[in-house]
Image (cartoon, rainbow, N blue to C red; front, side, top):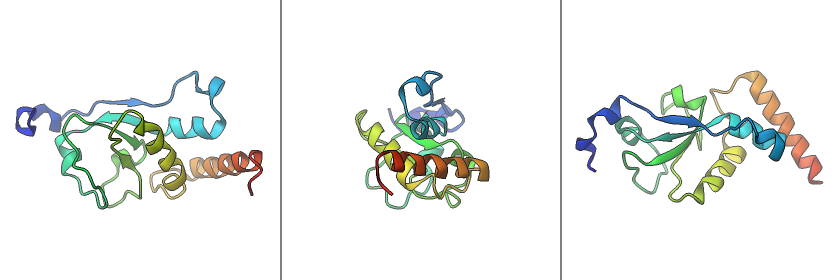
Length: 133
């Protein structure tokens, strides 16, 4: 469908939290943190019109994306790297979330100081468990 055939796409954003209440049973605390701070959404006209420096592939209305829950309410100029990703395939979702973990949350402008401190602590603990400094 063309963008013109979807007038409601500008007004409605469909999103779902990535986190599940069962995450702590299966994931390490760092992955639980990331999932609590990421949502899955459906791109609207506003999303595809937003500036996206570095994006190589055009985003379509209705395309599934993943984004930082804190950056979702910030203007595009306020967001930092990897705040919003549009994985080209289902298998690309893991890669996009992993990139957010490494490149986004450490500098996210929407993250509270308490959450940033939790992220840094969890990241350090995870690195030490692996034997990496």
